[in-house]
Length: 253
Image 1 (cartoon, rainbow, N blue to C red):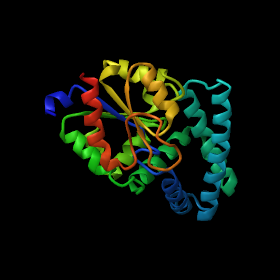
Image 2 (cartoon, helix red, strand yellow):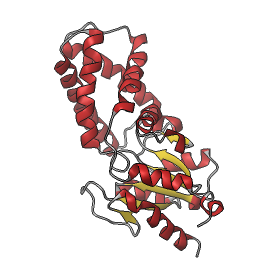
Image 3 (cartoon, rainbow, N blue to C red):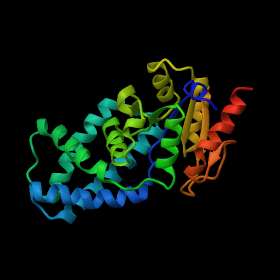
Image 4 (cartoon, rainbow, N blue to C red):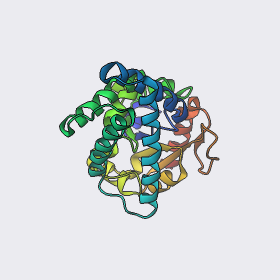
């Protein structure tokens, strides 16, 4: 495959379950949260960790219910409320005076900037596969339901940030990763024909959304949570460059 052929295609990486192990990442987050807040604001380190754990479980249950009932609000409105509630809940749980509301965004993004580059949770072969694909000339993007600032932080820690053109990020297209609109907005923003997109995700539902608007898909079956349900899949990220070559041979027929 020549570099020119490769540059015709854009590859979109999900984060959790594809680039990073969410279980391992969660464990590290819990410790780092306490290490960040306790020296800065007081309170015991383990209480800050507990506060984060309790809030995330609560908000995820709410999110799942809202998604199932098709009651999700626009992403950036949702995220503003998330930050407000997260900061308030954390400080109240630990028993420390809640900072003024105008400080909440600053506190939240200070935490993101401090912690995300220090997380070490990437799956084996991910770094090498991404560097390989970048060196071949593929355009690389993320396509995750996380915030773009978080994605940049994780990739900075993986020493891969410069391999990516942009970090989508539900915030960048102001929609949840809950239907094909998510991918449609991304592709339109970069003026990309979906037939020139390759979406890598672990969850079949997201691959279904991408495929629905014409994208090519590769399933990442790295955690054992999902059995392969698509023609092109990987069980180790070292396999990804070769799988993409096989996929493109099919596309060009």
